[in-house]
View 1 (tube, rainbow, N blue to C red):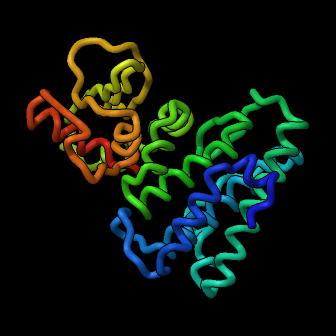
View 2 (cartoon, one colour):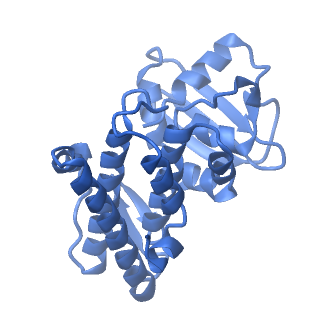
Length: 254
Protein backbone atom coordinates (compact mmCIF):
# COMPACT_ATOMS: atom_id res chain seq x y z
CA UNK A 1 0.00 0.00 0.00
CA UNK A 2 1.39 3.38 -1.02
CA UNK A 3 0.64 6.12 1.58
CA UNK A 4 -1.79 8.75 0.33
CA UNK A 5 0.68 11.64 0.66
CA UNK A 6 3.21 9.74 -1.46
CA UNK A 7 0.58 8.88 -4.06
CA UNK A 8 -0.47 12.54 -4.27
CA UNK A 9 3.09 13.72 -4.93
CA UNK A 10 4.08 10.79 -7.17
CA UNK A 11 0.85 9.60 -8.85
CA UNK A 12 2.92 7.58 -11.33
CA UNK A 13 4.44 5.47 -8.55
CA UNK A 14 1.54 3.00 -8.28
CA UNK A 15 1.48 2.14 -12.02
CA UNK A 16 5.25 1.68 -11.93
CA UNK A 17 5.02 -0.58 -8.88
CA UNK A 18 2.34 -2.71 -10.51
CA UNK A 19 4.45 -3.08 -13.66
CA UNK A 20 7.49 -4.21 -11.66
CA UNK A 21 5.46 -6.66 -9.58
CA UNK A 22 4.02 -8.25 -12.74
CA UNK A 23 7.52 -9.25 -13.90
CA UNK A 24 10.51 -11.28 -12.75
CA UNK A 25 13.54 -9.30 -11.59
CA UNK A 26 15.65 -10.86 -14.33
CA UNK A 27 13.16 -10.17 -17.14
CA UNK A 28 14.44 -8.10 -20.03
CA UNK A 29 13.13 -4.62 -20.80
CA UNK A 30 12.93 -2.12 -23.63
CA UNK A 31 16.05 -0.52 -22.18
CA UNK A 32 18.35 -3.01 -23.86
CA UNK A 33 21.13 -3.15 -21.24
CA UNK A 34 18.83 -3.38 -18.21
CA UNK A 35 16.66 -6.01 -16.61
CA UNK A 36 13.67 -5.21 -14.42
CA UNK A 37 15.94 -5.34 -11.38
CA UNK A 38 18.41 -2.92 -13.00
CA UNK A 39 15.59 -0.44 -13.54
CA UNK A 40 14.50 -0.77 -9.92
CA UNK A 41 18.08 -0.15 -8.77
CA UNK A 42 18.26 2.92 -10.98
CA UNK A 43 14.97 4.29 -9.69
CA UNK A 44 16.01 3.76 -6.08
CA UNK A 45 19.19 5.71 -6.73
CA UNK A 46 17.20 8.44 -8.48
CA UNK A 47 14.83 8.89 -5.55
CA UNK A 48 17.70 8.95 -3.07
CA UNK A 49 19.75 11.50 -4.99
CA UNK A 50 16.86 13.83 -5.76
CA UNK A 51 15.98 13.85 -2.06
CA UNK A 52 19.60 14.26 -0.99
CA UNK A 53 20.28 17.27 -3.21
CA UNK A 54 17.00 19.01 -2.42
CA UNK A 55 17.45 18.38 1.33
CA UNK A 56 20.95 19.85 1.19
CA UNK A 57 19.61 23.03 -0.40
CA UNK A 58 16.66 23.17 1.99
CA UNK A 59 18.91 22.94 5.05
CA UNK A 60 21.50 25.42 3.78
CA UNK A 61 24.15 22.76 3.20
CA UNK A 62 24.19 22.24 -0.60
CA UNK A 63 25.73 19.06 -1.97
CA UNK A 64 26.88 18.16 -5.47
CA UNK A 65 24.97 15.60 -7.46
CA UNK A 66 26.61 12.20 -7.44
CA UNK A 67 26.82 10.06 -10.57
CA UNK A 68 25.49 6.57 -11.01
CA UNK A 69 27.94 5.26 -8.43
CA UNK A 70 25.06 5.99 -6.05
CA UNK A 71 23.43 2.81 -7.35
CA UNK A 72 26.21 0.47 -6.21
CA UNK A 73 24.86 -0.25 -2.69
CA UNK A 74 21.48 -1.18 -4.10
CA UNK A 75 22.97 -3.65 -6.54
CA UNK A 76 24.33 -5.62 -3.58
CA UNK A 77 20.94 -5.86 -1.85
CA UNK A 78 18.60 -8.81 -1.91
CA UNK A 79 15.46 -8.37 -3.99
CA UNK A 80 13.34 -7.89 -0.84
CA UNK A 81 15.70 -5.30 0.64
CA UNK A 82 15.91 -3.47 -2.67
CA UNK A 83 12.14 -3.28 -2.91
CA UNK A 84 11.88 -1.90 0.63
CA UNK A 85 14.64 0.63 -0.08
CA UNK A 86 12.92 1.84 -3.24
CA UNK A 87 9.62 2.51 -1.47
CA UNK A 88 11.39 4.16 1.45
CA UNK A 89 13.44 6.46 -0.82
CA UNK A 90 10.30 7.52 -2.70
CA UNK A 91 8.58 8.31 0.59
CA UNK A 92 11.60 10.30 1.74
CA UNK A 93 11.61 12.31 -1.49
CA UNK A 94 7.95 13.23 -1.07
CA UNK A 95 8.57 14.39 2.51
CA UNK A 96 11.45 16.64 1.47
CA UNK A 97 9.55 17.94 -1.57
CA UNK A 98 6.64 18.88 0.71
CA UNK A 99 8.97 20.68 3.13
CA UNK A 100 10.64 22.50 0.24
CA UNK A 101 7.27 23.55 -1.20
CA UNK A 102 6.35 25.02 2.18
CA UNK A 103 9.64 26.73 3.06
CA UNK A 104 11.24 27.73 -0.27
CA UNK A 105 10.37 30.05 -3.12
CA UNK A 106 9.36 27.77 -6.02
CA UNK A 107 11.62 29.86 -8.25
CA UNK A 108 14.66 29.27 -6.04
CA UNK A 109 17.57 27.95 -8.12
CA UNK A 110 19.21 24.66 -7.19
CA UNK A 111 22.18 22.98 -8.84
CA UNK A 112 21.48 19.52 -10.26
CA UNK A 113 24.00 17.62 -12.41
CA UNK A 114 25.83 20.81 -13.36
CA UNK A 115 22.79 22.85 -14.32
CA UNK A 116 20.30 25.07 -12.53
CA UNK A 117 16.78 23.81 -11.84
CA UNK A 118 13.88 25.15 -9.80
CA UNK A 119 12.52 23.62 -6.59
CA UNK A 120 9.49 21.82 -8.17
CA UNK A 121 11.88 20.02 -10.53
CA UNK A 122 12.78 17.35 -7.98
CA UNK A 123 9.40 15.71 -7.51
CA UNK A 124 8.50 16.31 -11.16
CA UNK A 125 11.67 14.66 -12.37
CA UNK A 126 10.97 11.55 -10.31
CA UNK A 127 7.52 11.46 -11.88
CA UNK A 128 9.09 11.59 -15.33
CA UNK A 129 11.52 8.82 -14.42
CA UNK A 130 8.62 6.65 -13.24
CA UNK A 131 6.73 7.20 -16.49
CA UNK A 132 9.71 6.65 -18.76
CA UNK A 133 11.01 3.55 -17.03
CA UNK A 134 7.55 2.07 -16.72
CA UNK A 135 7.47 2.26 -20.52
CA UNK A 136 10.77 0.34 -20.48
CA UNK A 137 8.89 -2.42 -18.69
CA UNK A 138 5.57 -2.43 -20.51
CA UNK A 139 6.14 -0.87 -23.89
CA UNK A 140 3.26 0.97 -25.54
CA UNK A 141 0.34 0.01 -23.32
CA UNK A 142 -2.46 2.53 -22.82
CA UNK A 143 -1.19 3.70 -19.42
CA UNK A 144 2.28 4.43 -20.81
CA UNK A 145 1.01 6.25 -23.89
CA UNK A 146 -1.43 8.35 -21.88
CA UNK A 147 1.27 9.41 -19.41
CA UNK A 148 3.89 10.14 -22.08
CA UNK A 149 1.30 12.18 -23.98
CA UNK A 150 0.90 14.72 -21.15
CA UNK A 151 2.18 18.17 -22.25
CA UNK A 152 4.25 18.57 -19.09
CA UNK A 153 6.31 15.52 -20.10
CA UNK A 154 7.50 17.28 -23.27
CA UNK A 155 8.12 20.55 -21.42
CA UNK A 156 10.08 18.84 -18.64
CA UNK A 157 12.18 16.88 -21.13
CA UNK A 158 13.06 19.99 -23.14
CA UNK A 159 13.23 22.75 -20.53
CA UNK A 160 14.26 20.95 -17.35
CA UNK A 161 16.46 18.18 -18.80
CA UNK A 162 17.33 19.45 -22.26
CA UNK A 163 20.90 19.30 -23.45
CA UNK A 164 22.02 16.24 -21.45
CA UNK A 165 19.66 14.23 -23.65
CA UNK A 166 21.80 15.12 -26.69
CA UNK A 167 25.30 14.55 -25.28
CA UNK A 168 25.54 10.85 -26.05
CA UNK A 169 24.12 11.29 -29.55
CA UNK A 170 26.43 14.19 -30.37
CA UNK A 171 29.44 12.02 -29.56
CA UNK A 172 28.34 9.61 -32.31
CA UNK A 173 28.25 12.26 -35.03
CA UNK A 174 31.07 12.86 -37.50
CA UNK A 175 33.52 15.51 -36.22
CA UNK A 176 32.50 18.91 -37.58
CA UNK A 177 29.05 17.69 -38.58
CA UNK A 178 26.15 20.09 -37.92
CA UNK A 179 22.69 18.75 -37.24
CA UNK A 180 19.42 20.60 -36.85
CA UNK A 181 16.06 18.95 -36.62
CA UNK A 182 12.43 19.75 -35.85
CA UNK A 183 10.25 17.27 -34.01
CA UNK A 184 6.63 18.18 -34.59
CA UNK A 185 3.39 17.18 -32.93
CA UNK A 186 0.44 18.90 -34.63
CA UNK A 187 -1.16 21.59 -32.49
CA UNK A 188 1.91 22.14 -30.28
CA UNK A 189 5.26 23.90 -30.45
CA UNK A 190 8.05 22.11 -32.30
CA UNK A 191 11.00 20.72 -30.41
CA UNK A 192 14.12 22.04 -32.16
CA UNK A 193 17.40 20.19 -31.62
CA UNK A 194 20.82 21.40 -32.78
CA UNK A 195 24.35 20.04 -32.55
CA UNK A 196 27.56 21.49 -33.97
CA UNK A 197 31.19 22.10 -33.04
CA UNK A 198 30.12 24.52 -30.29
CA UNK A 199 27.82 22.10 -28.51
CA UNK A 200 24.14 21.24 -28.49
CA UNK A 201 20.84 23.07 -28.09
CA UNK A 202 17.22 22.10 -27.55
CA UNK A 203 14.20 24.38 -27.34
CA UNK A 204 10.50 24.75 -27.97
CA UNK A 205 9.60 26.95 -30.95
CA UNK A 206 6.60 27.80 -33.10
CA UNK A 207 6.22 25.46 -36.07
CA UNK A 208 8.12 26.73 -39.09
CA UNK A 209 9.00 25.02 -42.36
CA UNK A 210 9.07 21.25 -42.79
CA UNK A 211 9.44 18.93 -39.81
CA UNK A 212 12.22 16.38 -39.66
CA UNK A 213 9.96 13.99 -37.75
CA UNK A 214 6.24 14.32 -37.11
CA UNK A 215 4.58 12.16 -34.48
CA UNK A 216 2.16 12.05 -31.60
CA UNK A 217 3.38 13.67 -28.36
CA UNK A 218 4.10 10.37 -26.59
CA UNK A 219 6.31 9.17 -29.43
CA UNK A 220 8.16 12.48 -29.46
CA UNK A 221 9.05 12.12 -25.78
CA UNK A 222 10.30 8.59 -26.41
CA UNK A 223 12.47 9.84 -29.29
CA UNK A 224 13.94 12.60 -27.12
CA UNK A 225 14.97 9.99 -24.56
CA UNK A 226 16.60 7.76 -27.16
CA UNK A 227 13.75 5.27 -27.33
CA UNK A 228 11.48 4.00 -30.09
CA UNK A 229 7.77 3.11 -30.05
CA UNK A 230 7.00 -0.48 -30.92
CA UNK A 231 4.93 0.71 -33.89
CA UNK A 232 7.17 2.75 -36.25
CA UNK A 233 4.14 4.04 -38.15
CA UNK A 234 3.50 6.40 -35.21
CA UNK A 235 6.18 8.73 -36.63
CA UNK A 236 6.59 10.12 -40.15
CA UNK A 237 9.35 11.91 -42.04
CA UNK A 238 9.90 13.48 -45.43
CA UNK A 239 13.38 14.75 -44.58
CA UNK A 240 15.25 12.05 -46.48
CA UNK A 241 17.52 9.31 -45.11
CA UNK A 242 20.63 11.43 -44.52
CA UNK A 243 18.88 14.14 -42.50
CA UNK A 244 16.78 11.60 -40.68
CA UNK A 245 19.82 9.50 -39.77
CA UNK A 246 21.63 12.52 -38.34
CA UNK A 247 18.71 13.59 -36.18
CA UNK A 248 17.99 10.04 -35.02
CA UNK A 249 21.67 9.63 -34.13
CA UNK A 250 21.61 12.87 -32.15
CA UNK A 251 18.60 11.71 -30.17
CA UNK A 252 20.70 9.30 -28.13
CA UNK A 253 19.09 9.89 -24.74
CA UNK A 254 20.90 9.17 -21.51
